Image (cartoon, rainbow, N blue to C red):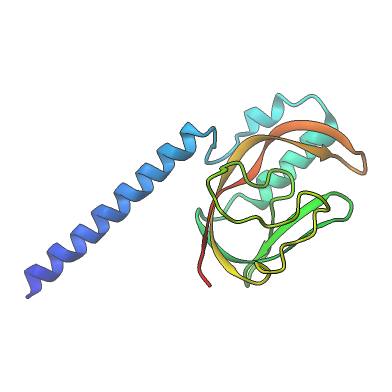
Length: 159
C-alpha cells in the first residue's frame, strides 16, 4: 500500500513538472519572459517609461506564475486598466493584456473598453509573463510606447 502511494505521488509530481516545463517552453516560444532585468530597463531612453518599468518590476517581483485571482473589471481612468485581485493585492494588466489569442475569454468590449459583466468576480488561474507590448504612457502623457510589461498568457476559469 505504501509503495503504491509513493509511486502514485511520484507520477503526479513528474506529470506536474512536465506540464510546467511544457508551459514555460510554450510561453518562451510566444515571446514571453519570466522576468525583466535591470539591464533591459537601463536600455530604455525615455525617463517616464524607465520609471514605469522600474515600478512594474518592483510590483511584480514576487508574483507567482500562475496565480489565482478574481477578475474585478476593466476601465479607462488615467490609463487603461484590467484588474484582477486576490486577498493580498490588485494585478493590473492594462499595459499588456492578453497576447495569446487562444484564450477564449473576452474580458472587455473592444469597442468601449467596458468590462464583460458575465466574467466579473469570476476566479481565474492567471498565467502571465513579460512581453513586448504597445501602451499609452507615462506620468500623465498619452504617448504610445513599446516595452516589456506584464501580460496575460492564459486564463483558466475556476468558478
